[in-house]
Image 1 (cartoon, rainbow, N blue to C red):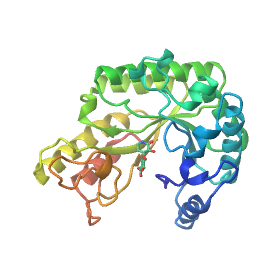
Image 2: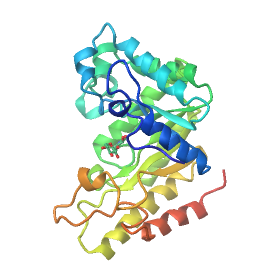
Image 3: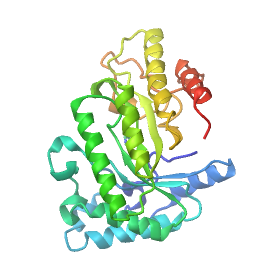
Length: 297
Ligand code: XIL
């Protein structure tokens, strides 16, 4: 399954407030179809990657129209070709202390929490076949902050289901990072069961492992990274509602973490299953093992 890291974000699609530029997204959609891959959309609503015109143009009066127009046009453009859409991305950030753990964003300021409902309803109307995903970061590990994120995410998903909002799946980004604490299998298992209990599918959408603060020695680092993949995925895949695992990139040659989570010793980061020469690393084997052991679905 192919997911563009940037092509379907607002800053690429919406260079002006009145136009849509699908050049890059269409190239990727064609690549996927020519190579018999599914295609996945990321993302319709995010507090980041908003174009420069947005803060100058959007306000409480026109924000709903702008949101609906964007979703109707973009989802409509790829209708019938999209496996799933990340309709909203990272909309909860409990550490800010806002009601229901909502993340501060222009959408929240202009429209209140119901922008989430509006986004899902507009996406469903524009493509009745795509799986509509509520995509989230910081849900995997066990710091107090992450525990709060799980509670607030479940609360929000429950509210959406109760209101018959067409949300079909939770996306768990899974940018695994020791800064988020450590992995607690029991707690994560229960979280997945709670999500599945709401009738939602689950996708692991952006898996990688931050090696920023791991030892420099490559053998040690690769072993630790592989262990983190295996520990997480072996539990995630126990739950039959987990329908997909996607990594955020394939090779260490191209990864957002080389800029976002660079190492202090300036060594190249090694977060992905393939090394910078596209050779399989221990992480590849670890992922393969968890797939082999996973119950069939
Ligand atoms: C990252 C991309 O990988 C980068 O290329 C881009 O510059 C910034 O965004 N969570 C998300 C993704 O939901 O959109 C982010 O992708 C990584 C973190």
